[in-house]
Image 1 (cartoon, rainbow, N blue to C red):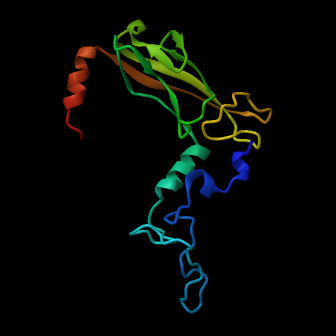
Image 2 (image 1 turned 180 degrees about the vertical axis):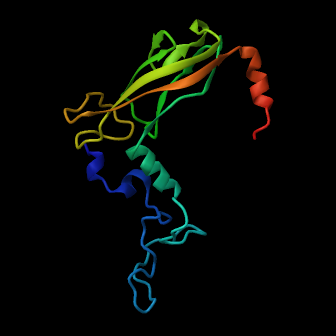
Image 3 (image 1 turned 30 degrees about the vertical axis):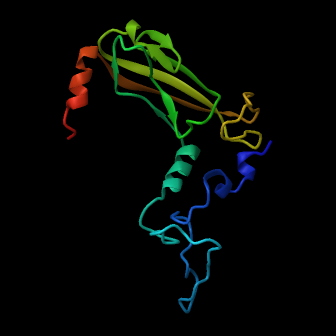
Length: 177
């Protein structure tokens, strides 16, 4: 099994000409001549070594390395099972473990909304994920064993409003401010 830490970033995400981390084509040149030439032509509009924005891959890399606990601010009662938490940036990890409470109701990553009471409440969750160590494979691995190297744990509480499902149409047509 190949570990993520032993793979170059290009094999995980693809080569990123647009990365803010990429040196410019004339970097370190005293004469302005090219010091880096590409083996393949970069995509149209891509400048090697730009310094104006984070590329899509830069952002994806940051989300993977520094994931965050995410949650919906609103749940609609009696609308089936809904997610109450997820680990942003780690959507492809197969062995993330969730322990949550929505108000006084203990649950995991999802909640049966028929069991909720309408009104303001709090979602408190702990999300555990295998720490990216040398013996952890990403993404879509079938390995479900937890490493001995450690676990990343993300714990926090967030307000959530449980609303009547009759208000779904109001939210769908409300103007975005």
